Amino acid sequence: MVEKRETHTTISAEPDPIRIDLLKTAVIVVDMQNAFVRRGGYFDLAGYDISGTQRIIVPCQKIITASRQKGARIIYFQMGCSPDFSDRGPPDSPGNLKSKGLNLIHRSPEVKDSFYIYGTWGAEIIEELKPRPEDIIVRKQKYDGFIGTNLDIILRTFGMKYLLFVGTATNVCVESTLRHAFFLDYFPILVSDAVSQAGSSITQQATILNVKTHFGWVTTSESIMTGVENLEH
Image: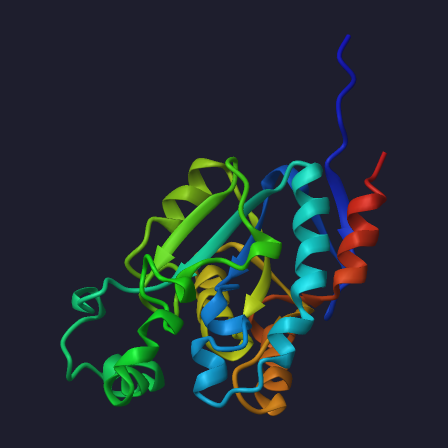
């Protein structure tokens, strides 16, 4: 007789602990790309403090590795656009008018490789978190990972129910996707020390408060590791 492997665990979280099934869990790794993490990338050139995104690399590594080993799916978001920007919509769209990156490129075309144009260094997922063949990469052009992608189909095809959110930026792509996930009846769990904001730390605090109050659960990488290592029997 084949021994049944236990895949359920309870994660310490706010506002309440949450019991998850790792075989129905996906780790959503949001935009951990050179453009947003590395010196010389778009965020760095645009004047953002990237120490936060660099600091979350290790927590992301630990969560991805441990969760993968216990049967969770790993899904990477890759923010990007085509070299001619045709998939970003009309030039006068609100997204393009608000884009610091496009404004930077218009002023300094030589920094294009630092932006998140597919096929360039900036769009590549950082080496420390390089996806494995069994992982899934979802390319997106909007902050919300459900818009214009097949993310919902992927999650439902694999029977996913619980989504662990790590990556950047907490207050932009992470929160946009997490809210949408909640509206689609997934269980979103924000890992507070494995996400980093763009801009003021106030936005990080605001997203954490918003999630634990209205849109899901907030936990830490330590709580995830404890839960993964101590599966229920």
